[in-house]
Amino acid sequence: EPEVTQTPSHQVTQMGQEVILRCVPISNHLYFYWYRQILGQKVEFLVSFYNNEISEKSEIFDDQFSVERPDGSNFTLKIRSTKLEDSAMYFCASRGGLAGGTGEQFFGPGTRLTVL
Amino acid sequence: AQRVTQPEKLLSVFKGAPVELKCNYSYSGSPELFWYVQYSRQRLQLLLRHISRESIKGFTADLNKGETSFHLKKPFAQEEDSAMYYCALRAYNYGQNFVFGPGTRLSVLP
Image (tube, rainbow over all chains, first blue to last red):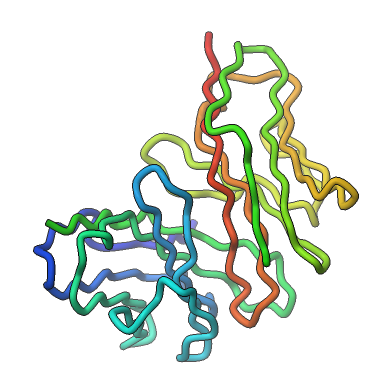
């Protein structure tokens, strides 16, 4: 059964450094998402992406964040200058494109980002 | 504003006992609700959605619009049901992202 994959599983970085988190969504899916979960808190929506552009973004997704689908398979989240409070588990998800559809999103295993 | 609450952070029950995980939502339109489960060291996976009115692994959930609730129930809990359970509301914006509740950790004791 196809799955969403994410790399790396754990990323440690220094404050102020740029990080890129990578995701490979399920191949025929059209909608892509990033969520994050700070330790002990709930899963929060960051951004959705459809038709090669951002469709929605939350207040968390400020100018430090960007997303890209560079080659038709990868879906990346870049944080330009990491802060301590960016430490979290980042989940990628994808969804099929049927109009209306089931709404089910398929989640990757997550990347744990630790900012020191 | 769209919001999901799950009042219990942790719920412990004995094997064979009934279990009910509570979920309430606030949404002005017609909601679409989901339950996702995360077993230890595994990814979030769909358990069930209200639209299909299905029963998965013995779990059911009924949407009650009057009480704005979507509680998850199982008549006889099993040890393998121990996991983190998240209630989610599908946002009716262009991206249709999920709004998640804070989650309830279910612990089924032997």
